[in-house]
Length: 153
Ligand code: 5GP
Image (cartoon, rainbow, N blue to C red; front, side, top):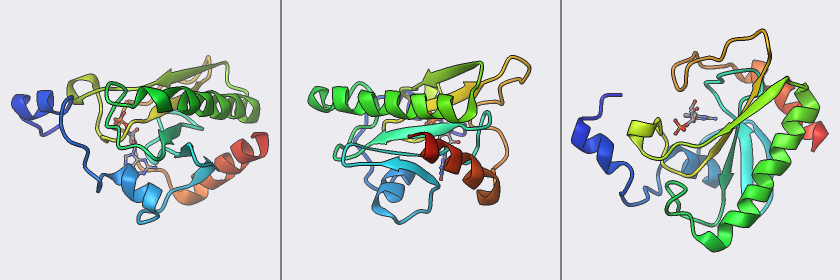
């Protein structure tokens, strides 16, 4: 990351930027490969996947940068969607394990400041790609995986 130390520590407590990438995806101003959407959450494929099937789940209706500023009243219904999509990823891709992770602030690994949970399928024999450092996946690679997840929902 190119942030200075002062900028990096600020990322934990700052105001919500309504033009962050995920806000643009929610508004339809940026394309994404969606797997699930309702009035609570949107799930879509991560374009820099750390493994096959790497999916992100973001809350709608809130301007939450991270778990700390997520309104508590919205958290339960959002987490149910994280679980719903995790179950679908497992059913669709039958990994040996699944990492479900979430970062708060740049020093913890956060790069996009709209709350999101990562769902990262893991296989015994496949190493994990590095966070936010892998290559960009092509839509034609992600679409068939997304279709399997949609079918499992
Ligand atoms: P964080 O580092 O904030 O926990 O996770 C942000 C995630 O968003 C990263 O895994 C990164 O690959 C992914 N990402 C960044 N930009 C985009 C984008 O424009 N579209 C999609 N689908 N994912 C993105």
